[in-house]
Image: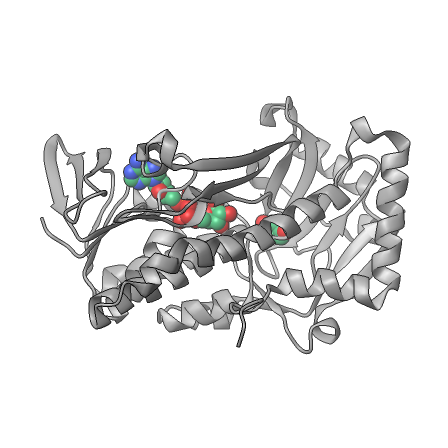
Length: 396
Ligand code: APR
Ligand code: PHB
């Protein structure tokens, strides 16, 4: 098999890249380890920045998002038992975010790919990448007991944190930066109306909580839990009881509980790989970086990597210019580090760190009090939350 770009991984990064390349007439094949149903079963954050909405429109898959997604003009921060609204609209000159689950984004991209008749190999085993230091990279995999090889011009490593692409780069060529947090998020999805029309981020001495949503009838809630907790220890009742203890009296009264339709514990990590290009191999999305979910930057960062990568590849194939691919890594990393900084900061501000003692809690509360009463403080949170512009910090 021969293609221009072999994409490893059919998560949001790989699928969006495939779609943007297809729009530009560039041929790509996607090779995915799991089945399509498995990919759709993963529940992840669901807050889209304007830049991501625009990209989904550019890829031609924004229609259902505009119909079903919920526009949010603000969110609440709850601390010392009281809620305070961050008015994104006023603080950013009219910017907003869209609440639309990553599962739905993935579904829309999968359907568009299928409708266009593009090749995705699901349930590919033993995927391996070769010769990306040369002009003729290759991808090998097994499917239904048969061995296959793809010859290509470039490989896009969109295969997530545990993928094969980053692992195939020689240790001496890559530097990894990592911080693992001493707690996880216990998430529950339930077919109950959200407790509030906007999101509530909660700082409580009992630990962080988040009230989020997928639609007007489907809620997503999270609790900070010790990393040693197992999901089996948390009955639905225990989850709702603990959530109520972290909320303000009004939210506690209004919370509608119900059976969980998904329940899982996710660890929190900050992780960046430098660089993101190795000859004719590019890493994008979770293959190159992870943010803790506070602020929901993961999918948005994946989308902007893909924007830069698709632009660079289109420039290469259409104009024979390597300028975009030469700058890919540097351009992405600048944006990634800014989002890493915000996600780490927001995580540190909102979670309970027992090792910091009572003074740690008091200092967080003082910082939150400053943020909500200072225009500069609120604005800084708001402009990062809605997402910094693609050309932020670049000279005109
Ligand atoms: N071969 C082929 N496919 C692989 C391999 C492999 N060896 N290893 C992993 N994959 C697949 C995974 O099964 C998965 O479907 O690569 C895909 C990677 O998808 P994601 O993990 O969703 O990563 P990405 O597409 O970069 O999306 C980033 O996901 O984790 C969230 O917060 C993150 O929202 C962000 C988004
Ligand atoms: C989610 O809805 O899953 C979600 C929302 C906002 C976050 C993180 C997760 O900051």
